[in-house]
Amino acid sequence: MAPGHAPTPARIALVAFPGVRAFDVSVITEVWGVDRTDRGVPPFDLRRVAADPAPVPLRGGLSLTPDRTLAWLTRADLIVVPGLDDHLTPAPAPVLEALRRAHARCTPIAALCGGAFTLAQAGLLDDRQAVTHWNLTDLLRTHHPRVTVVPDALFLHDDNIWTSAGTAAGIDLCLHLVRTTHGAEAAAAIARSMVTAPFRTGTQAQFIEHPTPHTDRDADTLAAVRAYALTHLAEPHTVAGLAARAGMSPRSFARHFQATTGTTPLRWLITQRIAAAQKLLERTDLPLPEVARRTGFGSEITMRQHFATHLATSPRDYRLAFQHTLDQREVDMARLHP
Image 1: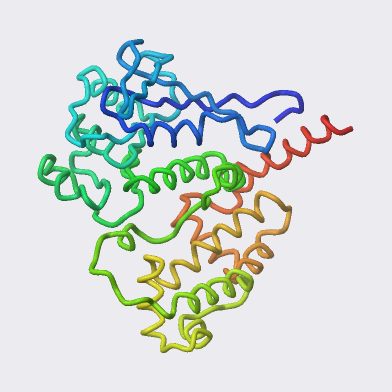
Image 2: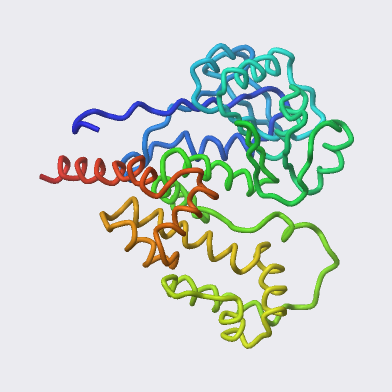
């Protein structure tokens, strides 16, 4: 990017109609509607889109004033649908038709929590996988039997459509969409300003109601083991080695680890290594084999395989796409402080 030329803002459409949740509207606005360019976050053009310009009533005496009609969806780079206060609220027919046309144009569409019901009404989830709040999975299956409801994911992607579980998972999905489009640094900067984790591992299985267990006396031990692994990512960790550090058998360690985090020790470790590699690729010019060594992948080939599986790109292409964010920030800082 040439110095002095501002990047074109990504165009984000928040689709609103009576019945959408105020919390989800706030999440979408907080992620894409706040100017954080001074912290290295690219600019976004967030628009509140509705069938007509009339204020949209929200629960709690609030209202949302649209600034664009549905016609603006033809310009959007991403469409985000909030969840619903009443999950069976029928969306206006023009909204459903506009979402169908947007999907036909290959515009990415994301739904937070009960927003999956809106996409299902539009037929966009037929014969596709989707997720919603764990307490709504049976309701979604009953009213939309053609949807393959996945009960425990935090968020899912199927054919350019994203769905997420309840409340906090909507934040996870929004940050993930920023991360995959604009890089880990941008997502981390937004997460820091929101005082939330830039990403969470695991599934919503860890949040589903179960009979209350006895106090897990191993929680502190497991947290200490995770902290150790994070500060020693370059080491070739095994479940047996981490279990020994926790003073447990490998089987007991794996069971307690999954109950605490919602994922297995090795999957958690791979996620942490990918995140560390993303930061090094964005912030440094280290050769790819050195990035792989420092993050514990051992070889560039192994790192490339995990990037392909989890990010659908290669480390080299990721660096080409996102390292300019750091370079441009340095240029901007030099201009502000010559």
